[in-house]
Length: 414
Figure 1 (cartoon, rainbow, N blue to C red):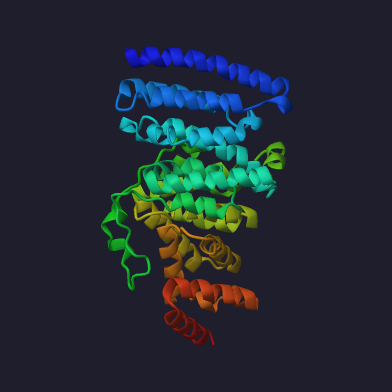
Figure 2: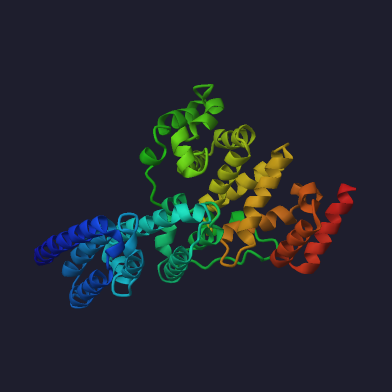
């Protein structure tokens, strides 16, 4: 009762401050001064949160009230407060306390704040409009993600699906940061170990802990998709699915793509989870049909959605790694093989970290003779492309072994 009463008082005070800030920024955006409000929040951090250390009855309601206030002040609503806001949500007296609250009670609050930050940055990053202020905001976001990756990796593991929805496909390093997280109690097997038997790892049979609401994310597709996965009915569902993944024309112009990317991500995860739990062949047939029916843009987004599940050792990583390798091996279209390679390669040529599942998938692709990777024309279409493949292969499997396997593949092709 004491904690609730104190939080209620704080909530009323914060409500007044939020209303004043929103009104002031709306009436005279150029004259808005964020500094007094920033200092006010820092004062609350010091007085309320530091004084309540060890007393979660007071701490958790106070943190929730502050998080709700900051969500109401997000950069999309008050752009002039963006830099102060970023510092406030990542502050050492706020972020760690919110994420360390018992029972992970603070995680949903911080997930909303992180989503708000990424949604603000998304149009600038999508269009590559990095003015100096946005560049600084982006750097600050990357630093905060690095802290999360190092100190709270389970948070990124749990919410990776929602976070990937709001990261543009061009932000490869940021996405790699999200997907490289793995539970602190897990010791990752070295992906460069010769003859590593991924399917025999004990963690491969375990499902990851993720948060996803398919009722919302599938936007009415869940029932027909579930029916088709169970009965292969209606018969025309698979042929109509690519059309259902498109955005309305007005939304497509604003989004810069014809496709509903969050919907594609949701369909891929839903179909994959169905395959893992029920062991059916229908999900793979859906993936095979989609890579044929979709155009180049849609196929790229579909393959990116699959690659987003290549993370630490778990059942999802293993299944989606097998999906990519199967599509590469079985597709008769060279463009499909080339786009699969592109999706994997562009995630590997950026700075570390690289997700574990991404590495083991690419290593298997270039090492296993079944895929005849080096015999495909796109690996030698230009000298600079050939050097790029050689450099990545050398870093993945070693210089001598990589050169030997490439020569063997070339001889076999002849």
